[in-house]
Length: 112
Length: 116
Image 1 (cartoon, rainbow over the protein chains, first blue to last red):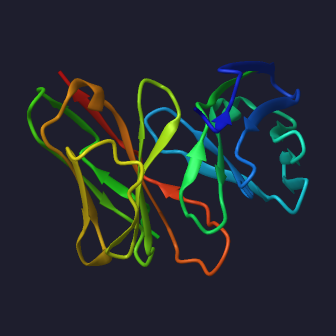
Image 2: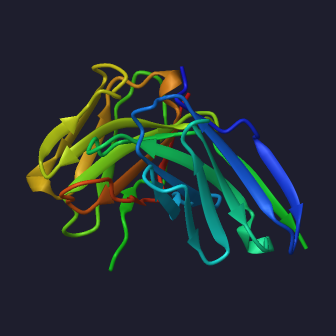
């Protein structure tokens, strides 16, 4: 059974608006969460992360929110730009395990 | 610094043949990971090297898959014999040694393997 789920396969937003990508997890031992962005024919690239001791982390236009009680995290992109169009993967890891568990990805399309 | 390099970028082989994928991590990165994405689904963990040692190989699907990391530098992933379900994109990633917590990965561009 998948431990990290991204229930929206795709999302389309208008340039300048907010993009909200969601991720749910089931393993309560996960304590570090990451978002990666992937363009076609490229590998995923790290975007932003958050530790379980925090509930928010911000980096420029990107903010990740963590709700531990709901086992839910979200990535907010404000304002969205056409160059943000990509597949976004949520990932989670446990302690010093090293490996990460990924979701299926959400394809974001930002329309000019 | 040079990124993570994977070779080949594409490979098409027949069922029953052998294929070897190669990954050159970022120089100095002790951690090297192999992941696989099948049919546009999640990116699944295969195994984790710390230097030349296998730290975790819990994600390896079966004994047709063999991974090595010579001298703690580059790594190879061999599939022998290949089956149709082995098709997918194989990603390699590396990260520096950590003393606590989890570092983010740098991924290679992947090898797209098609078994026909």
